Length: 431
Ligand code: B12
Ligand code: SF4
Image 1 (tube, rainbow, N blue to C red):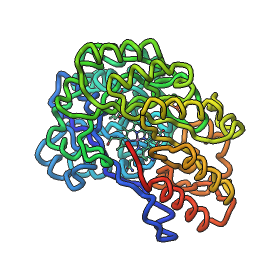
Image 2 (cartoon, protein in one colour):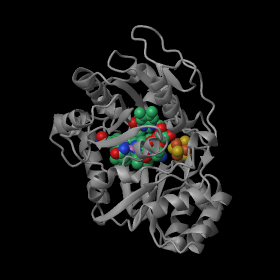
Image 3 (cartoon, rainbow, N blue to C red):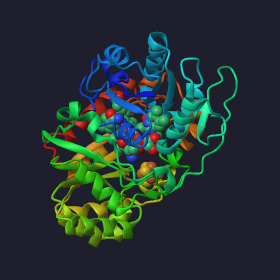
Image 4 (cartoon, rainbow, N blue to C red):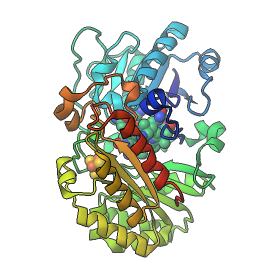
């Protein structure tokens, strides 16, 4: 079969821009579509291509005409869901291919894609299930019995067999098809440094259960590490790309494994800069691990601080403390590792809250603060808690930089303060 895997274009809408002319919050995101490269790696029996509409926004018609796909796979985060539905409709009209949707939004809110434009929804890790689906479709076999795959049935409730994810779903012996995006590679740069950046997975899922987070939906709550050899192989496959982002939700979720990986990187003579996601309590419990990783090339860590008070952290079920956040910052500064800090701004914020957060970021010299607005993403515990407060249901606005529930202060002022946070925090960023 000819299989075309599509990364949707940069999308999402911005209330601060549309209502108040604030253009400094909306951002353009680019990076390689590792999910699609990963899926392609296991579609051994088929001809596969990747179309990255973030890198080539006008590429759809030519790709459909030139390749005549039998099967099209689309990936989407929540703010891309409407765009992906529209793309699915266009693809159906143009070439009638079977359309499969997977990824973060499909896994957390599959009902959204229960529409005539979509034939199948893949829930959670898809490397093995997509292969099983493609092979069954080609042979005219049964698809209803493949766990994690759901045939759409518009107007009726979806039914599918739950897939119990395990390391078998990682199919580690088949590497990601980095070669399929070679034509886009020069666009995958780390904007702050202007250097090429490549993505590698070392683990999937997360053992924690923060109320706002949608990661558990991808693995059924499991934390699955890839073997050291797999990670090293994938880093090497990226050739001379100097910066590697380990795109895992929680890279050091298994500290022993992280330590072995670090030593293997050093022993293997791999000379790269690394960016990884780590929890502050892991830094506090294992400062030596961070020290070793610094030696292996760790340049920056992305930490979800989320909130600056214990009360705020526990309301999110973060299972962490404000003291651990401060201690981690001190340790990382001491080691000379840059800190990308994620902070969640509640729609309940008043001016003093904005001031407190700005002061915290400045006082603690967070190298690159990233602010998001607390967003009840479909499928999360937060969504179940806040369902009745949601005023904006159009998923185009679920970019994490819009308040989809009412703001306590006047909305114009809320976004002015939000924009000011960014301005203050981004005067001299380091990454
Ligand atoms: C890398 C990354 C990006 C890259 C994506 C590169 C690309 N595709 O173009 C860039 C930088 C572009 C990006 C952008 C954004 N991102 Co982002 N990103 C990530 C990150 C860190 C890793 C994703 C990844 O590559 N994982 C590795 C792959 C192999 O795993 P995977 O994606 O889960 O794919 C597996 C399954 O999901 C499934 N699958 C996935 N797609 C498909 C498709 C088919 C057909 C099938 C069958 C299966 C399938 O199979 C795959 C293999 O098992 C995740 C966090 C995380 N750790 O997951 C956030 C994350 C996905 N991003 C997120 C967000 C919010 C965004 C942004 C809105 C910006 C922001 N505010 O952070 C923008 C959206 C873009 C836009 N404006 O249009 C959220 C999504 C939340 C949600 N429900 O929407 C996440 C979860 C982080 C978070 N804050 O919680 N992101
Ligand atoms: S926010 Fe981070 S620590 Fe919490 S569940 Fe998500 S990935 Fe895990």
